[in-house]
Image 1 (cartoon, rainbow, N blue to C red):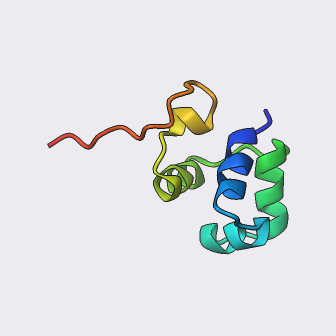
Image 2 (spheres, rainbow, N blue to C red; image 1 turned 90 degrees about the vertical axis):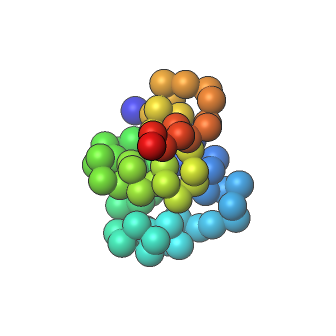
Length: 74
């Protein structure tokens, strides 16, 4: 599975793969492998990405075209 959306989100913020690797505490190579779909994104990293970009995990996974992060329930 190609994770095109994390690449698009990263590029929209003018971040490099190296910078995202530092943010996620992984190497540039591992982050690149996530974007290319060589490695599945672990749940913990997926949640961090969604929080960082303020989008839903479903948006990152391509399950919806609505990037809106779900509202927290009180």
